[in-house]
Length: 61
Image (cartoon, rainbow, N blue to C red; front, side, top):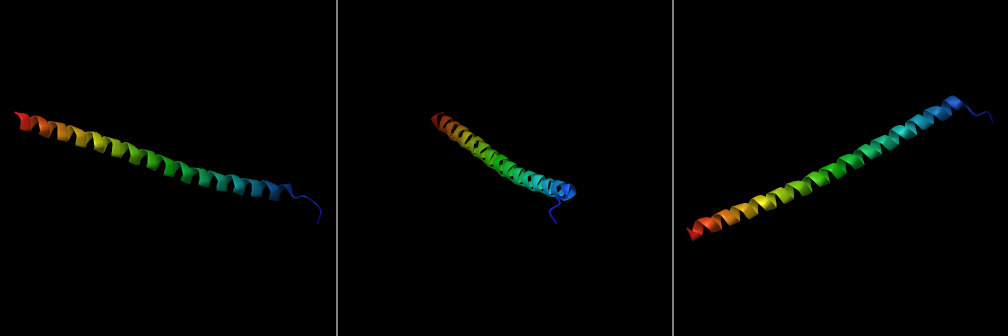
């Protein structure tokens, strides 16, 4: 009973590594999605600024 089964240790280590990789994948996907959303918000803000500038220029003419 006191024998250490190296095969069992390796399998548990393998499963632990897979679990950590899955967690890292979800964190990475969440961060990239948040970064993409911030970028889209900045682009949308710039477009709105251009539209307001353009409409302001047309009103002056």
